[in-house]
Image (cartoon, rainbow, N blue to C red):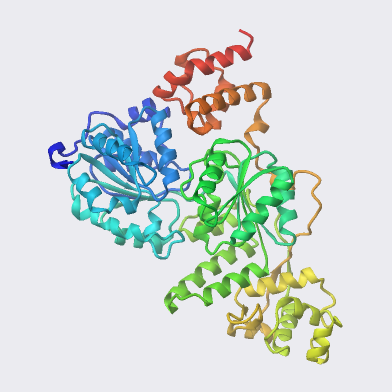
Length: 619
């Protein structure tokens, strides 16, 4: 095809008003904080770097300008599943959207390219590796482009947790399309990463819009790992039975085992990791998006950009490597703004494993130093005795003046105890046994065990043998975990979990400084909803008095979704469905006042839901 023959004039700003587009297309009355400022900046031709929490409405920041400015908006998205999901949702709104990716055959790709060249698209989604191909760039040079939106912009940062080398090539957009505004968006970036995004995408002159990182609807909870499977089951049964959720594990084997364990207990749990074939991964993700109550058990390969609004919990059975990763992954819960839980268990072996992986990596000294700082920050969140949300937000340069009241340390403040003597005993035992043994062996020595290994090595004769009987095995595990987490002990990177002293432990070993240790909570059998989970959170279904009506509207939504071949939330979010049930509109005009009901959805589904309401009311 000769793209030059289809060339159109440069984009201009249309006469449409952003607020009018928001109401007519998306069904919302007003912009959220910062959205309006960002949209006006891009509509007027300016560049923008946007940091906004997951569920904060980032997509509207480029979708509304795409509909206001003349031409087609090009959206760079890292995942095929995400772009397909967003295109389906936009089409339901009556927006002319399409994607170009490797799932398309030649005819489909050609039809999409023709639609772009003839001005028949409002938005075109494209993966970075596709965008930088010479053919695609040539296509764009002969099309009318309204703006470039670079989603998940943290992928450009080598210090980020989702680095994608293809993103590095996107800086060329600034030079090849100098008259086209660009907006880069991410939910996760500390100050270092924000600076790198600006430099690598040639957005150093762009206006920065940094929204608050707080997700007040998410309850953060972290507990010591004792029996991870039982703890997970107790948590789901007590608080999220029947809910949709994501469980993260570090290894593929653990993903498979955990998914099987949950399935054996009667839950719809599906594994997701790179070891599965592409067909299985796609089917599992499709079920997660379209069915209610599905739990995905996954490695971190799952979830970037997942747009499902009703994920009620995110659980971690292994410690994330950084607060960026933790925030990004937990942010997949509660995108609809409703109460959700970020739950994690972690133990000493998690710390040892991650420290060994870090020290044994091929990175240079600078890389390892930065990664150590990130891991230390993650461990700091785990061991903190004050409000977790304040610690998390402070890491991203945000502030929360008062404790949040919706994390475990606020709801059940942890006790601390004077650990000076216990710490001296622990550190001395590491030294007396030659810094060659792991925590289980060290605890056996401290508690005076007479097992064969201790007798074989002669450690029944060292001065620390039997001096720790006042603490239980779990208490000593807590002591060692906190010493490793705080950098007083380290795992031998070339050994098998052997603990070694660090220079920082010297004042503690000599008893020169005090140390307060966190007292791990006593694990109670779960007979019902836990106190931490019950306080400060209510599921949508708990707020509904008309359960019959709720199920009827959900059934109506599900039938429409199956007919259209889209996930139910593409028809209406739970929050919109809840408002329909509560306000019970009697006409299309009243239905149009419901949040999330735009003109296209009103025309497509308004009469159907009004009929469902009349049937409920016996009219």
